[in-house]
Image (cartoon, rainbow, N blue to C red):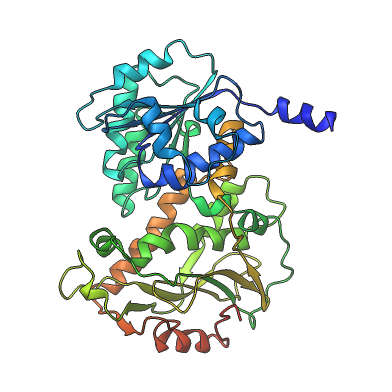
Length: 403
């Protein structure tokens, strides 16, 4: 027991974590609960501080009350003393001086900036922090998705971030890479691939798009789910388990990725009635596709991917060699692992600039080939359009629906 306690103490990290957008939904649902769990495990040192920066005018105590869970644990009160709030208007570069004054005498050697704002404010937050003297050569920045909306915008954002940070300081986060079972994919040897047993990757959601109509209609399933989560899962299946540089190995996969057939674009019945969705919108809420890899040993193995809203049930799974691997872990907060990686300086579970741009290059090609093709309608509570079953059937397989 004493040896275990010593290991915990040795892994404690004192840090200042500034969350731009710290009053938002992501902070409340995921980031603060993840940090609370890390605190309970002894991963945060006594000098650590979590500072929310947003336009809202709140006292520290008001912020702590807003972040308090419905059923707080006994140690919430002690953890909450690590939480602070400073009003900052990143669009007008106002309030950064109060952040600087607070952090100038910090006893924490490590500083992280977390961009949990709308993507269009990422650059303003970074530049404001830099001009206020908050950024040093040791400061890390965590960037939430989406990193751009196409290849050109991704390159522009990456270039703008590089004006302030060196590449090793930029951590592009994909929360799927924090899931324990997803992480295990890269270490798993699936044996010799087979041309008669396609790889299947499914990220299905039973919910609709809720109140996100305007955002989702600008984005669609391809850019919302395939460009990041699905392609990252494909990479983790395909990389060799002995790969020393995971980011480089994933990049090799992305650069070898090819479309093998016309994707199936779907839209659930009732999508056009969702507030914020444009009349006659062709935005897809479902996409299924067959791809292949110009890379040994996967050259003859089809890769089938699908994702969608309003499907029969929630399902996160890969199927390799006919064997399903369930990726869901009830109650798991993937941000715990990723924030821990960031504090320890482990960049392997974050996405490199080259990966982001290679993924967008593939997505942009699919969008260019689609042009204005209308999506096929499908019933809510189904597994998507019948054309999706035909696509997987043409590859000599049938979808595994987690039964």
